[in-house]
Amino acid sequence: MIYREAGNYKTTYAADQAIFTLQLDRVFMTMVMVLAFLVVPLWANEYWLQAVLIPFLIFSLAAIGLNLLTGYAGQLSLGTGGFMAVGAYSTYKLTTAFPDLNILLVFLLAGFFAALVGIVFGLPSLRIKGFYLAVATLAAQFFILWLFNKVGWFYNNNSSGNITAPPRELFGLVVTGAAAKAQVRYLLSLGILTLFALFAKNIVRGRIGRSWMAIRDMDIAAEIIGIRPLHTKLLAFALSSFYCGVAGAMSVFLWLGSAETEAFSIFISFQVLFMVIVGGLGSILGSILGAAFITLLPILLTNVPLLVGLRIPIDLQKHIEQIVFGGLIVFFLIVEPHGLARLWQIMKEKLRRWPFPY
Amino acid sequence: MSAASPEKLLQVDNVSLSFGGVQALSEVSFDVHRHEILAIIGPNGAGKSSMLNVINGFYHPQRGSITYKGQTRKAMRPHLAARQGIARTFQNIALFKGMTALDNIMTGRNLKMKVGFLLQALHLGPARREEIEHRLHVERLIDFLEIEAIRKTPVGRLPYGMQKRVELCRALAMEPDLLLLDEPMAGMNVEEKEDMCRFILDVNDEFGTTIILIEHDMGVVMDISNRVVVLDYGCKIAEGTPDEVRANKQVIDAYLGVG
Image 1 (spheres, each protein chain N blue to C red):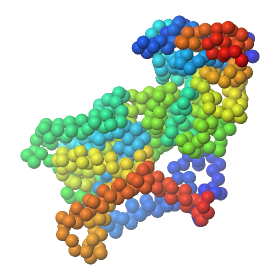
Image 2: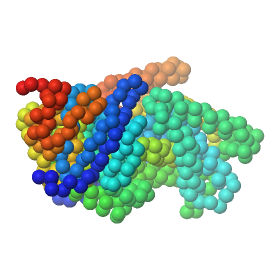
Image 3: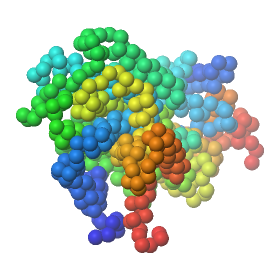
Image 4: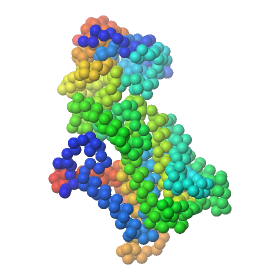
């Protein structure tokens, strides 16, 4: 079976509108899923899960969230860290106030709180665009973190100022806090990411996604067609913040275990933005590839000298790592400004014609 | 052709529009009859595009009123205009560059699609059915405008003439009662112009769509329009059938020249 479209006849519009139109794509995707759900938890050790895979999954979700807003609806945002913090702190408040509430439900509710905050900070988007909007969302970032630091109620007035994930169970397994096994937390994160990525894909290929892209590409024409700009942009802000909020909740409850506002600093906002840009604006797959690139590459770079048996001082190594990392980002953006998702697409197009040149 | 049914679809009454010191339109009035093709002509800067912008609610005139489908308003709103069946194309193509031709046209169906947010996220029964139902409609239009081959091409990669056609298709996807075409044939060669004329006449004929058209090619205007309105410096200087307008002294002085 060769990867190509020729001979692959679609006889219904339903078949034409499927996410994966080629059978080989479907097979490949199933294999990835089997690998991720079954093989990885059996094979991976605590270090890999905790330090590599769980953060990768969580940042993928945050990157999908930002991509909905920036890549699809065209609204630049630097408030990702802030919206993630809203998710994390609401989860903490909700689960300490109602310990019996199902933790998944708490995650969803936290997402809704983040969505509300997102709508409030999305209101300026009707008037301001581009870099100016980015600055307005920056205000969200700093204001939210300041609020959570300042008002003790948000961290239950505990002396450390941290929020700590209490142990919560799901199907009889402890899934959050220090007692939870890494495998369990990995599987839960993977499950949430898979579902939400699918939801996002469905949204962007339907009416709502088209209205977002219409606003992004040509807002005047979109308005003439009857798309209401405020409505559409706020929905993008709400959904994007929902995703970021859930990601924030996961990063405290399924990954870090305990955190202060510093865990959601502006640095995180930039990091997620880089993921979206490197991965590809306006692509769900790109968000995941971008998250993989940004979270996995530093780890790879750290381990490469050790693997080849090179002994260099740790601080020098750290600097080299940063230089190479920055260099690679620049390299990828020059090679393909539309991100890894576009590279993947070009590769598939080439593969379709292979071995013929056209 | 349509002279038998002089029912008014749109009535523009004494519309005046100015931007600061610039008077774009002054006291312009005309009627648009159901099922006709009305051309608006005039020199550059005469206020033709501004007139279209007033009709679909993008500009709000300072004075005058607009009566559409029997409802009189001081000004339209874009959303309301779209909802009530006014579609338009733009002088310098306003397609959604990052999307495929098909997605562009499907966006034109946006107002007709009703399935809620959650069902869409889950892509369950009704959402899936609705998508296919509208796809069927869109495919009929794609067939009508003969752009089957390019439906999956991002519009940014299409040649100019094709982009114009996709834009017309997107407007038609809204199933408009009134279609505003802003220079649909600008920058086309003779063959493309002939194609476009045929499409416009077919749309008018088959779907019964009323069309207001801005065009500089006098051959085209005289051939396909039922009536012509002539603007000059924001004022209406003539209105009538192509033959009447062609013979009008003022129009010859302002625009047509002596040929």
